[in-house]
Length: 236
Ligand code: HEM
Image (tube, rainbow, N blue to C red):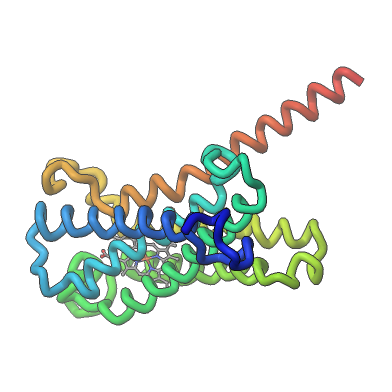
């Protein structure tokens, strides 16, 4: 049933349009993880339910959070329907946050040298990259909580417009921290493309590009605003 013909509240989070968003973002992330690590790589199929699912979940989390900041800026698919656009933005932000939390649980359950040898020293402790990556990841998840909580219906009224917008902007800080998390985990692999199975980039690199995009777009928008302000003050 299409969104227009449903009798359910039009601002509900789970509806045909958001369902399609979920199917595409999570479906493509999972398919990529399977192709990159099982088919092109040599990860055994018994690791699909947690290790590979964790990779797909983490990629989808970053893509959802990034999209929540890009819809209406460079993603213009819902411009014709502002109410639907708001629902999709909220859906992407919250789904991104919940998937990031799932990724954190999955990762902590898996965190040992048998799965992540490159983040451990020979004495069984985390190495410096591993420690830095995990602590920055925890911080990123913490800062993602702020925009997620402020989507609760009473929050705009409770916080007031300016403060509410500020809590939403904390998501950019979270994305910057995700980027740092990924640099600590993946940089060495990004710089060795000869080792990419079937030439496919690692998920950490795709996620880093997804996290970087809203930060660059935000910078450009701010720059344009500043230039407009300067022009109008010169004109006056
Ligand atoms: C408690 C917080 C977190 C912990 C403990 C954690 C842990 C990890 C670990 C151990 C990996 C390596 C996974 C692998 O190589 O298969 C990883 C990768 C990754 N993390 Fe996190 N993380 C946290 C928070 C986050 C957050 C908030 C995000 C984004 C919203 C995120 C996104 C990613 C991505 C995209 C990868 C790359 C996956 C890959 O290379 O396969 N992480 N994280």
